[in-house]
Image (cartoon, rainbow, N blue to C red; front, side):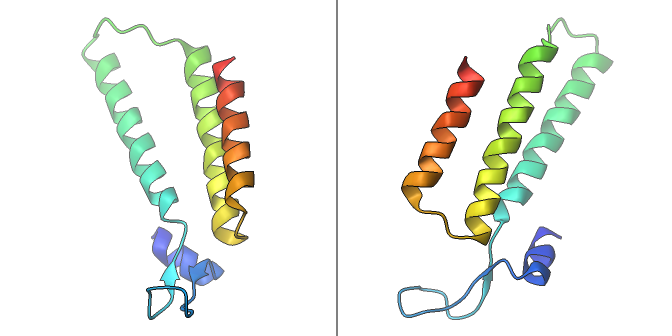
Length: 102
């Protein structure tokens, strides 16, 4: 599904002399990984609640975690669409991590 959306939106890595790929390869695969990860978190939280497991879930921590993850995903998507310089991408990721830490 994400692959088809990336192809439709034109978020593809085109073949060129410096690349290995010989045909267009969709980018934005990180979105599929994130969807799978968050789905597994939701399922795990459901089972924790369903079986009345003694796990304390701090809502502030989860909110900051999901908000930080959203910004990291946004940085990756922006990089997939408009090739960011690696140093700028790293600086953005460090800023998000620092904000989440404090």
